[in-house]
Length: 458
Image (cartoon, rainbow, N blue to C red):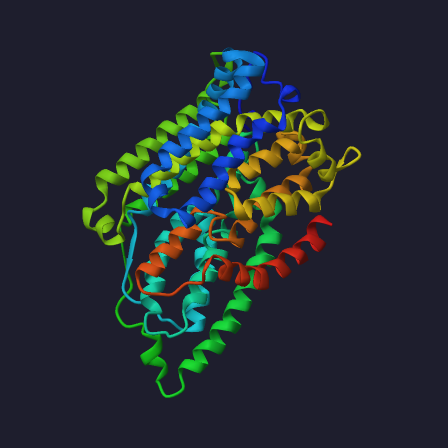
């Protein structure tokens, strides 16, 4: 097993000397990401890079003022080399490879077929990422249900299951878990510790979906034949099959980098840089290039593949990782820092309160981005991967489940949520408003999460 993501040999930023104002840029950027696309979409579309850079530059001020340029630069270098670069390389690789796989033909839009497709997508999300699985299936599901009158619920449950909950079982599934992997969590740790909660959540939601879809489907069959509603004509074909080989290469390279020590670490600017991780990133870039070179051009055209969503993610996450430096330092300082009241809620004496970690991580992940939220509470729980995989295993499971599952609570909880909404609405399907979607998530998700709390984190 690879050692945890390297730590500098030189002194880290002392969070105990930072005030609560050091958190403002991080909170400001996340709130900008959450609400500016809703209240000022044109401005955000044209200036999101400038807004992001502004918050990132503002975040340097308290660090420089309290401990100087040297410490500020070292912290920024630390988060860039050891967290941001590997994170973006993996996202870009999965985005590129899955964008080269196209499913053609028409699935049947029956309750059974829809439920099976969502179930398959939930499983796929753990291997090809929530974004990749969602983008792979959203268009075939649109085609399958185009004759249905009631179909918005299909895409709501697609967001619940494929765009979020299915990503809980591996570091490839959802960005928060990959950040945990970079911090030293074993590749198969989420698979082993989140398997039962994820099966429970997915099973209950798939059952609810089947019952709901069956009721709506029966309404539509009045005066119409079932075949006229469900479709299903045409042979189902898959193009871009070579990308499944590349996807296997991604899984293998990430697994090997986390379990085999082949190369020594080197010191660079006060950091211990893991060369096994660097080799993994080089392999991922190679797989990304191979996918671009060897996939038939028409496949990506048919998928509507564009680079702009990936560019926007890269720019925004650069700002997130820059602004999270100070909040993470404050969390590392524990009860001596500006977030001592929060730490008091998360801990009962010296023992973490697992259900508080689950709900606080989850509620923030519902409205902010779940990757930095996971990282913040990972740090609040001590940040030691050996402790978190051992004596504090249920705490890490609570943090992981909260970040992944509750990203489904709102359209802005996870990147593919809004992507699915935009694609579906562009095809003429009327989706619920922001608050309307929350109504669906409160009715279907909150009771399931309460049950998870009682069974696993009480």
